[in-house]
Image (tube, rainbow, N blue to C red):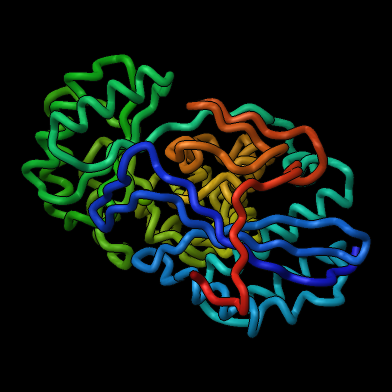
Length: 369
Ligand code: MG
């Protein structure tokens, strides 16, 4: 399969309820969709959201870098040589991880279409049913409790609680949610870099001293504060997970050599796509470190690629946080992975299995509008 063209579109899906973290508030999923066409008439699909405060990527920056630097590297090349194509993308420009991810997802979709099997099988796995947690946005305690009830009613039994705004209030939030939910759901905390190391130890000791068991605590301190993560891990019972600290395979080696964290959160938008995400999962496996597969606030094209990776790497990727599509009011993608509340069912058709996408908006002249 020879690559003929790279096209773009915009895809917008309103959320059931605004998504609030310590870093931002958002009311819709806004994805840049990348389509790679081959001379034999196949199309591979990829997508990426704008996350300037996390990855530095915006829709327009992705459009610009793909148009000017990355797409020209792919035109006329064979998809069969996917490892080399991904290495070219990774080495062509620093950072820009979401732009690389969108292209890599489309390339892996095409590659596995060419092999005639679903992506998770092409990557060597057989798990095709996953169960995701769901995010509870940071808010007033009463609102968070009612959001927990809604999530439980939808069948979710793992809740990822966003906190990190205000230490004392965050402790009260977790205590109230744990008392309210009881044994009906496991709790994961995501602090999104909102505390410092000493605050984290104080908060987690206050929570743990009440007998509250947390499944994990995600990125309590600033991304670059590896010493802080190590300090916390030495002093609390809860397992600590790196998210914003763990973009690249090399960063993951550093974290695990230091013994700074217990779990790595892999996201395609941080790693620059599937090739480096696979590498991270394999590095973590050599340290007997479990991984979560996570996503940004993003739609089902990219999230389905992450789900296929989790299906392929079932042993390493034991924790699933792929609730992006579940937060949207509808799924515009037909034919691929099915997202139904906590249940994710991978397609058994070749590649990502996408047959049609409703509501794609053209982006004339490569301008996000
Ligand atoms: Mg996170």
